[in-house]
Amino acid sequence: MRARPLPLVALAMLCAAAAGCGGASVTGATTDVPPPTVTARPARPQPRPRPRRPVRLTILASGDFLIHSPVWQRAAALGGGDGYDFAPLLRYVRPYVRRADLAICHVETPMTHAPPSGYPVFNAPPALARAIRSTGWDACTTASNHTLDQGQGGIAATLATLDRAGIRHTGSFATPRGPRRTLLLDAGHGVRVALLAYTEMTNGIPAPHPWSVNLASARRIVADARRARRHGADVVLVHLHWGEEYSSRPSAFQRELAGVLTRSPAITAVVGQHAHVVQPIARVRGKPVVFGEGNLISNQTPACCAPGAQDGLLAQLHLVVDRDRPRRTRVRRVTYIPTWVRHPDYAVLPVGDALRARLADAGELRASYARTVGVAGRRAATPVPARLP
Image (cartoon, rainbow, N blue to C red):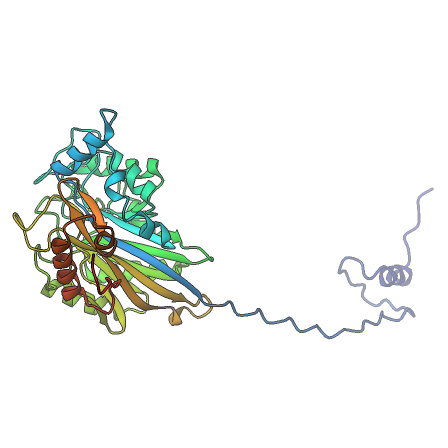
């Protein structure tokens, strides 16, 4: 027996009792069932997120790893026939590097498995990367006038060597995608630091590809810094290989570029090297510019190059990072550790420590300290005791 269809009124009553028939309406239907009454409760106010406390941290940046032939030959002797050991050359600066929240170095020369070579076309042993890592550096820049000494293959080998050692890097690239990626480094406490790196020159060697190495131009650097901010950077550090060799005075190119970069709200600080001597530390529009950190390690001496060729400094940027109000993030002060390369073992010595421990001739150490402080400024330097041994 077929079921008779429900009258429209009955159907409407069933729909009302069941809170509607899927949104359908019944024209002309009436019902005595009252609509349900819903009393809306006022929404509870959500507590405002508590502001995060500003974070204090220190970024350390050092000068050129310029591996002349006598330097890698010394590392070969220390390796004892089993390769190269650069770590003993860096053991005196290791405590300062490891103490920083984030430590950045500059690899000026390629590192490949081809036979090592020195000036004028460099190639350093890959063992250098292991020493960089064991000393405590977290990342290195690779854009320099010697980046192209071994061609595109040398760039790829250098970056692969750094990757194997667990060292982040930027400035030169193995693929076209490289320049489009922002290097974001974890400085601890949830702070992300973008590291950007560029070179003013390539010694006249044409780049194999437009993307092989970052060349310094104000427009590009500012655009990259803005992109880094969009990607979540709390701090943007610009690293430049620039200036005139053996000149402690910043060049016109350095002064002009520093003036443009420090206008950008996206850029926090600028550090650089290439001159192979120390250059000034200055405030430009309130932002720190470390124009030149000198050599970290090399075979250069006053006999070949300049009186300050054995001098260098470890720059320490002391930041206050406000993650809720990024525009308030600032470098509150800059300090540095003067360094000097001892010959003939190429140990990099913090000058104050070396004077106290009598690790080198006191007269040479005092002269190095005077040169560095005379250029970079006394107020920023780590003090040397008034009475020297």
